[in-house]
Length: 95
Image: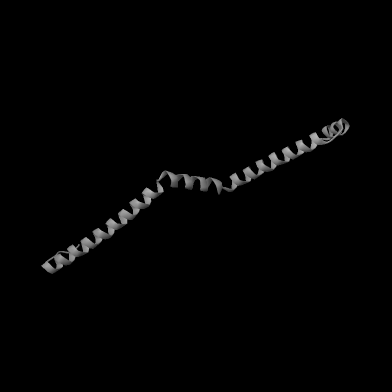
């Protein structure tokens, strides 16, 4: 910073420093508000759940499990409703 030699330069420097102080204060308040909002328990839970449910590997795993459970349910239901023990024995030997 350069040397101040007159009162007008001093007033101008003070004005610049006050402006800098108020702008930095506003930035700090905005950052605090944003941090407080992000650290709220509800927002943290929302963020975590959205990250979990948008993960591609998790979606594939859930779909595979759903398809496996559904096919197992319907195959068990179908084979228990098929009449005749001969057909059941034949199918059990094939699979």
